[in-house]
Structure formats: C-alpha cells, structure tokens
Image 1: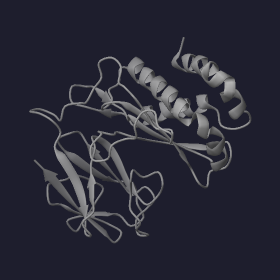
Image 2 (image 1 turned 90 degrees about the vertical axis):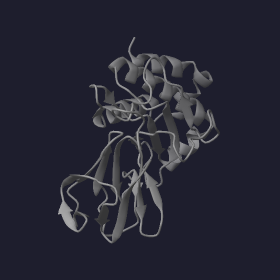
Image 3 (image 1 turned 90 degrees about the horizontal axis):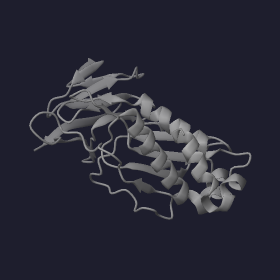
Image 4 (image 1 turned 30 degrees about the vertical axis):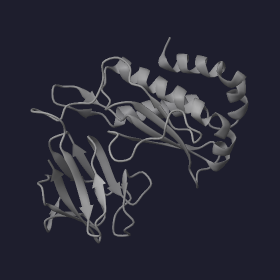
Amino acid sequence: MSVLQRFEKRLEGLVEGAFAKVFKGVVHPVEILNAMQREAEAHKAILAGGRTLVPNRYVIDLSPYDHSRLAPYAAALAQELAQSQAEFIGEQGWTVYGDVIVEIERGDGLDTGMFRVTAEVYTGADVAPPPAPDPYGGYNQQQAGGYGPPPGGPGGPARNVRLVSGDGRSYPLSIGSTVIGRGDQANMRLPDVGISRRHARLDFDGAQVVLTDLGSTNGTMVNGQRVSAVALNPGDMIQLGTTTLTYRVDG
C-alpha cells in the first residue's frame, strides 16, 4: 500500500468521516499531500557523503473559506500530513533536519479550493515551532527511522550564520536553501520595492553559504560588484534594492 493510500485510509477513520463532508467540492487532503511531496522533490540538496536533504517544515495556506471550514480538524489533519510526509521521505531514503512539521494557515487572497504549500529546511533554532498538537493546526511529527540532523561538514556541527540588516535586524540561516524576496513565496521576506518577488537564493551546507541571483530585475551586489553566484565570506555586504545585508558568522 502506497503512502497516499495509507493516508486516505487513515482519513476515512478520522473524525467519523467528517473530512468527507468538509472537503466536498473544495480542496482535498490528498491534493495537499501530493503537493508536499512535489515540494520535497523540488527542494532536494545533496550533502557531503551523498545524502539528500529535503525540507522538513511545510506551511499549508488554505483559502479563507476552506480554512474556516477546516478549523476544527486542522490539528488532526496536520498530524496525518506530517506522518505521511515522514513516511514518504523515509521511503525515498532522503534526510531531514529533525522532525517533519506541518502548519495549516489562512491564505488571504486564495480562491475557494485553492491552496499553497511552502517548504523549508527548519533547524529548530531561534523560534520554536508550535506545540503538538495545537489549536492553530501546527504539529510536529517525530522523525522515524535513521534520519536526523546532517553534520556541518568535516569537523563538527554547522556554524551559526546570519544576515544582519542596516537597521540591526538579524536573519539566521538554516541548512538548505533560503529564498530572499518580497513575495509570499520567499523564505526571507523583505519589504523593499526594489527587490523582486524571488530575488536571490542562499544555499547553506553547514560550512559554506553560496548566494545566487534568481534573475532579479535590479540585480544582486556583493561588496559593490554585481554577481550571479558567489560563495560568501564573513563581513561581505549584500545589496538588494535599497536593502543592505551583512553576512556574519558566529563561532
């Protein structure tokens, strides 16, 4: 029995069939799980030793109408989605950093029946995820099998790296890919009209950060030079639109 079939089977017995009524004519949980699997596939990163790292945190934005209908079952659905995604990742032989986390949120501007899945590698640092389960639909699925945090390359744990803006705000970087932009698909959102919706990407393998411009309208500058892709060094100044970010490494 496939992951999707097992997921559907569990949904049938959940809340005495309430899901069938809730999702009649609107978004269906299987579509969400399919999208989560596609996101994992799209965000694979190859680690040292040949292991494949995929996102472990998935935020599901539902339309206001769907979200209001789903509210009483959001935590239960988040739990089932997290469990099924953990099974899928395990079957593929991929690695995740810690637990698989699913959060269900209201996506203003989405039409009924539409949803959006955002995936990221989440290390658990700085901001703790919501408890499991919780009334807002967040759930942490404990990791199964033998996948856990990847090492930070030879010699020990990942370094603590971050970007610091001119006004002092700090943006810690997690292992994996982080998209910078002003759109809602960006992991690091910056309210700057000179920045594209998906402006640049940071790839962090635990030891080194590589900055890649994603074909932005106004370009990406490092230390005054326009770049397409560059490995960052501590103290480098990144310019996007009118925003300046300084690359810092602690420890």
